[in-house]
Length: 192
Image (cartoon, rainbow, N blue to C red; front, side, top):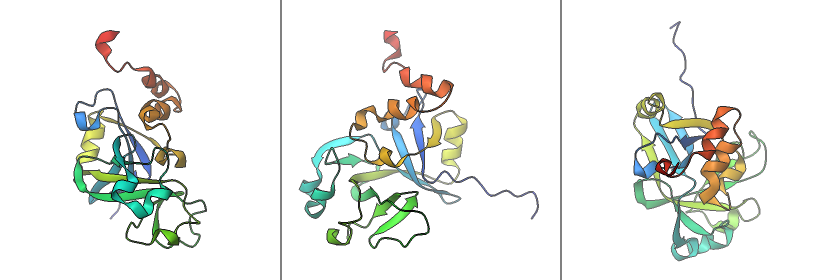
């Protein structure tokens, strides 16, 4: 059919909550989109560390966890499930690493059922997430129209940022133009 355009995929990009975001689950979050297509969207919150150490839940993977070596709350859905991300250097199209599936660039999902030794020589810092953020078909697009999210490019270091509490500001600060100014937005606007 002519006139039909393929929807733009945001897989591998970041959703950065705007100050207008009113849902407390997503206040000042940075989400890496792992999947975005006609079926809906799925991502993980990169900046919500929990006090739970990776070794307390997934002991075989503890030595691979980046700083801080804790489980992150990936979102409000499926908190009883875990998924892990890691950076594996190399170019798209190169042979995939067993136990790791490329999501975008050097960022990929780790199969936590695989023996860690399979990946030992390949992985950059591992980050483990309990739960995820999910959207039904069209839901994320509606939230974008409402101004709830900024969509920006991700960088491999976002996945393993050693100071996740500063990631929201850091991601905004590296943007060009007016978007960088949003990084200076006060945590509590009533204090201005």
